[in-house]
Image (cartoon, rainbow, N blue to C red):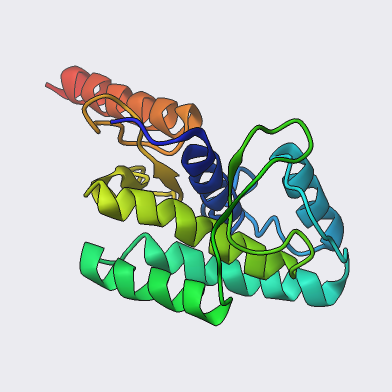
Length: 186
């Protein structure tokens, strides 16, 4: 299963944004409480377009984060309703654009639209590809019992279980220790 590069990038960003919440972040705390944290995330993902870098924008992005995390839990048909709602609210009009060092790709809002709106619309456009390919099973939740992370499973057979190597390793160590403990007690 192969999605376009911009779909993978958009959904990768959505997962990274979603995983800034307490319980999913590397620190275990909400990692999106200051505008500087949002700036660092956007820079890490080469997010282009307008940025206000203020508390209002941060609040809007945090609201978008909550909405996008919720999409991961929806059935395919319910996901369609949410994606259509996002696109309608933004009056999104898909078009091909080329900017910065990126070749032609799709945008459905202006680069000057508010950041939270652009995040939601770009996510919705990426989700269109996932829904049309009937691959919503690739929008996964981390199997680690102490993590609420989400991720896009791009493995060949959709068998990835953890949001990160860190979670996978932590669970493997726990399983090993549990087996080693069982073996000693026997």
